[in-house]
Amino acid sequence: MNAPASLPGAERPDGSSVQIGALVPLTRPGWVEAGRHLLAGLELAVREVNDAGGIDGRPLELVVRDTAADPRRAVAAVDELARLGVAALAGEYHSVVARAAAARADALGLPFLCSSAVLDALTEQPTEWVARLAPAQSHGWRIYADFLLGAGHSRIAVAAESSVYWASGTRLLRDYLAPHGGTVSELDMRALAPTAVCDALVDNRATALLLLVGHPEPAVPIVKAVRRDQRLAEIMIGAPAGQPEFAEWAKSLGDDGAAIPFLRYLPERLGPLGARVEAALRERLAEAPSFVAFEGYDTVAVLAGVLRTHGADRARTAGSWPLVAVEGTRGQIRFSRTPGINVWQWAWTPVQVADRDPAEPGRFRMLHAG
Image 1 (spheres, rainbow, N blue to C red):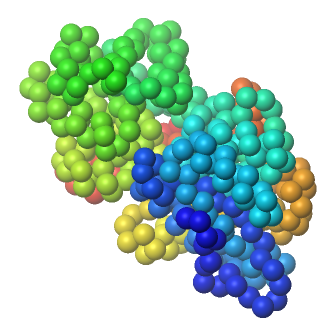
Image 2: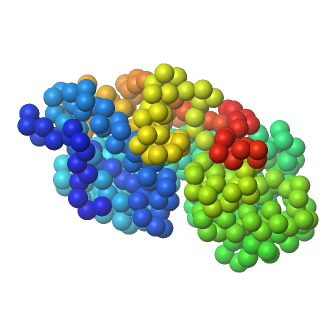
Image 3: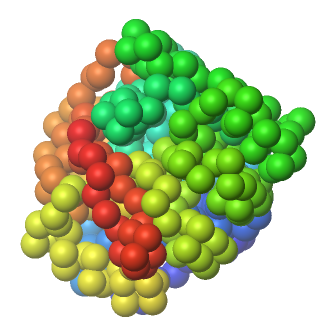
């Protein structure tokens, strides 16, 4: 998108708007479905802020830019949004893209509340300008590793593409599982076709295959090949990055997409605010909202609270991260300094391991919580 997204209720005659720049993957090769959910959450929260009087009588406005999962495009968008005078940045789903945006926001002195990216090293150096809602990868993936061990899996294979994010996930799993007798063998998806993945799984005597790859390619062909290989009838397929959360997964794979555990950042039960927002998001999306949509809503809820209290001054916004205490859709949001994390971090949003029920693939089962 090259033009600001003007939302109903955002344009009023009582003063200029307070603008938030929103970074969202809306075109390929970005994960478009995740971007659509993220934007739906952001937009819903903006609408509610404006219905409640905006920011001290001034309407809140999103200025949306499509990152398309491209770090260079994200950096250019940050530069443009900074020139346009936005009070803060919000959003982004892809970790590598968010890392580039965070570095640029830090350099420009532009507050950035990252909604969804989980890579631990969101910035290389400690910064006051960046905060994050999503849990760090090391936190969530350790919970996933605990689930694997509890389910009796110690011989793990990962089908991995080349990426800082996937490499970090592989390393986290290997380091966490090793003291418990677990092994992680890596299958390089730059070199292997799905049928060759099946042969490697048999050779490695793996009991679980984790998909550290993009969707739909090559995730969907890998799942179909493994499901049809009788030698692998007992193997568990997992997707810690959350691909099965989205309706597109079920649409692409049908019954084959069920019983594939993934990480999602939701509580076992939503409270009153979460339930109300879930109903509104379901109506807006015409499908069940993913945890990414809740992340979008919570991002604006935090920024609106900060802007109402501290005004639209960028330095005051950045200085307010440790003062935040906002009721979000998934619990009270507070930011702190967390060892090994260079940004202000909500520690932690609820984390669960879930899958799609084989008896009813449209329904989720919670398998483990952390």
